[in-house]
Image (cartoon, rainbow, N blue to C red; front, side, top):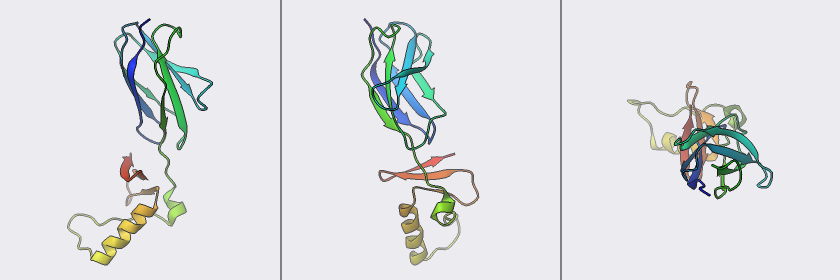
Length: 144
């Protein structure tokens, strides 16, 4: 039986994941998701030859397990896992962090203070933009 291989999943926001895989040539692909690693439910499917799927309306800061099938559940791909992003609201961290804008002069102390605040937050709003800034594993992710 042909099964999807090289299944990859990544969190692309607090509420969305993106799955990619190599088709096993078995036809339509059905995607199964679990929140405990043992009980799975179908969350959708894609047609023959489609090798990406966006799973949305998820809960932030949650671990999800995925497995795929191309033969109505007779065989499954390897299981992959992902944690969705989690961001603490700016209000919980004392308000938005205002970073210097292009052309503004900034002292070394001001810059260091801003970076220390940035490193201590899991999320904040940048200025007045609707984007969230999530810091995870040394990476900064804008969730717009």
